[in-house]
Image (cartoon, rainbow, N blue to C red; front, side):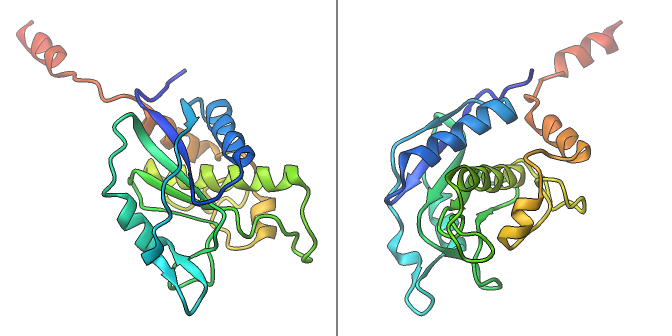
Length: 196
């Protein structure tokens, strides 16, 4: 099976329990067949805190993180306990720039059921893995998918998140597998072909 030459780092940002980090890394390794490991914490960027909303601006965080260097890792999944938002939404479970290096995952709202009761721990971890997979898809240039069972289907609520599967649809999976193929220098093969 194909693997990235680099690894995906799963980094806590601020105070984050260790178990969800390990679960996300294990899911990335097991389901996506990518090297993944939990890495050292990243300091939470306090400038991204919005005092009016009591949330952190995901766009400002991504802008700050994109300037950081992690030479041993192809991509980074940064996991927060804090609530994240972007200006057009009241909150986001995660955020990533298409083709970027960093994906953000917020655990803040994943522990509730749609009725407000507390979710089982296994459900929280499953949700965290789904959000991480979705954002990793964006890092590898996948856009939102119309298939409401696909991991790349957009959802802003817990009910929608619970309804999507833990898999990419066959189209998104094909695009993802193509994106994970290493760049192969075929220039020498081309010149040999032309010489014959």
